[in-house]
Length: 231
Image (cartoon, rainbow, N blue to C red; front, side, top):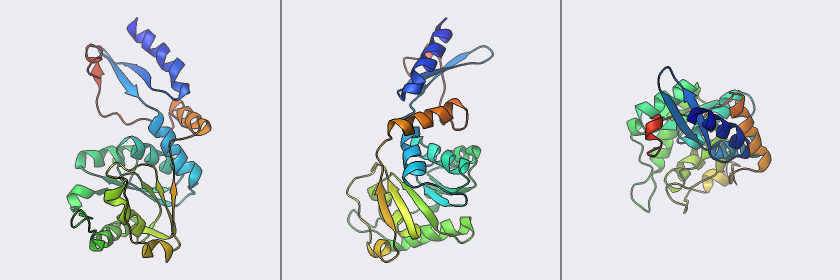
């Protein structure tokens, strides 16, 4: 059957780190989900390998309901860390809460505007953002920032990291020409490190955790078999 074939495809291709098709049967309808383990490997490398999390660490995660962010949130929770999840809508906030996050910031509701214009950032907004983080964490700044939006948020990310903290950059969705106030970096002994995708071991480990049900892709939409072409 088509379902059996899809299950065979899922089992045979999933460990390779490439896109797989995972089939799911319900009472009368069957759905197909397209899953890419790539974000899982990227998050695994950035969050658990380059900056090993320890229990009690606080990590700021931008875009926490998306591919990179949702995996990073799960890695943080599984490792005993406290994720502070930044999202852009109440619906996305609900997604990360279902994952298990308790500290959630809806940046649209808060109305943060980190840039006054295309050339000028607004440090007052960084401070307001940092105050919101401390409100949620009981007065603590974040040990790690999982940074992938890029230009729009990078200045704020550098500012809100704690003294001696780390900003891990693994993408630049909003622009790759980052700007930040270096005083908040060098005077506070912070560091910026980069992460690009994952090596074979990190990809394998991420896939293994998915196969064991310890982390999972966030599902935003399902399609019936009749809609496979659209999916």
